[in-house]
Structure formats: C-alpha cells, structure tokens
Amino acid sequence: MVTLLAVAVAMNLMAVTYTAKAKLTLSGGGYTCDLMLSESAEYGALTGSEMNMDGRKIALYALNGSEKLQIARAKSLNNVKLGLLTDAATSYTITVSAVEGSEKLYLHDNVTGLNHELKAGTIDITATASSTDETRFWLRKNIEDPLGVCFINNKLTISENPYPEDIVIETIDGTPIAGSPFAASITEVDFKTIGAAGDRFVVKFHNGDKKLIFIKE
Image (cartoon, rainbow, N blue to C red):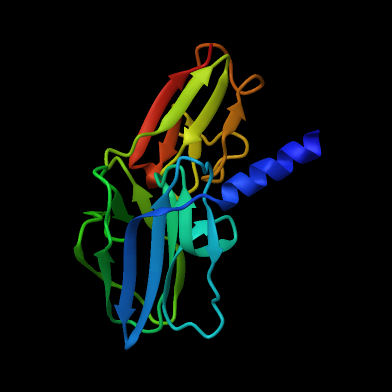
C-alpha cells in the first residue's frame, strides 16, 4: 500500500503546471543566458532543471546545494541564492520580463548592497573577468532582512539567514566561542556547556553589520 501511495503522489506531481514569476536574461559581451523563476503551491523546497555549464561564457542561475538551476521553482522563492558566471571585466545587464503575480520579489546584490525590485526593466551590474561568484545575489520578498533567530532552553536556532557570510558568535568582550565562525548555513548552536548563566553573547551576521545579543539562562 505504501508503494502504491508513492506512485500516486509521483503521478500527481507530473501533472502540475507552473506559472512564471519572472524571467531574468543576463546579457554581456555578445552572450545571453535565461533564468526562469516560478512558484507552485505543490512544491516545497527549491527544485528545477539543471543548467549545462559546459562551454558557457556567462550564466545566471539559482543554487540548490551544488545544483545550478536554469529553471527554478519552489513554493516560495524567498531567500534563494543566485550564482553568476562572467567572461570579462565589463558591464552586464539583467533584463527582467514575464513578471506575474502581485507579490513583490527583490534581487539583492551582495557586492553593491542594493535591492532591485523584480519588475519589467533592466538591472545594470559589473563583474570581474572570468569569475564565478555563487554568493552574488539573493532573491528576497522582504528587503528588511528578517533573521529567523530564536534562543530557547540555551539553544540558538537560526531558521532563516539571508546572508552568505559566516556567522560569528562572541562573548560580550569580543572573545569568539568554540567553533566560531560558523557556516552561514548552520541551524543550531547548543550553549549547554558554553559559558555560565547570565553570560551575554553577541551573534554577528553579514560581516558584523547585523548583530543580536542574548543572555544565557
């Protein structure tokens, strides 16, 4: 019965159709590359069609772990990392088209710090020669940079970190705790054996631009 259920679910997913949220076209040096973004209530985590990178001069792609997706879809496109491949130190243009839906989506540029609303038009960027930057852009629905951070029962949990940089955790006097800096993707740090009750700690995101202070219970 379990096997039959799995087959039925798989068949149902095959029938899903996707509505484009936006089409992004990267242009520069005589080359172009398209990235299609879509949302569907039937999908949860990011998935899609992987890009063939062989011989590419430029590319803009969504990242799902090590996968480079040219067609990306998810239940929510919030906090999706976009990578960039360029061929020369010159100006490039990202043309946004086929935008659908009333919900706003922003492209955050980690180099310039600018947030570009994804609406019909162009976004001008520059890049270094023959570079691959897998932390250049983030897709966001909220440009206020919400941090899904919680400290309960002496456990620090991070459910949503919109920044690609390592996370630094220090005592209030600036001494890093064991293991710091932590990877940006870390989801939990247990403080059972770190410090004493009443000790204050600082969590630094985005190279220290965003800071949180909490007290051990």
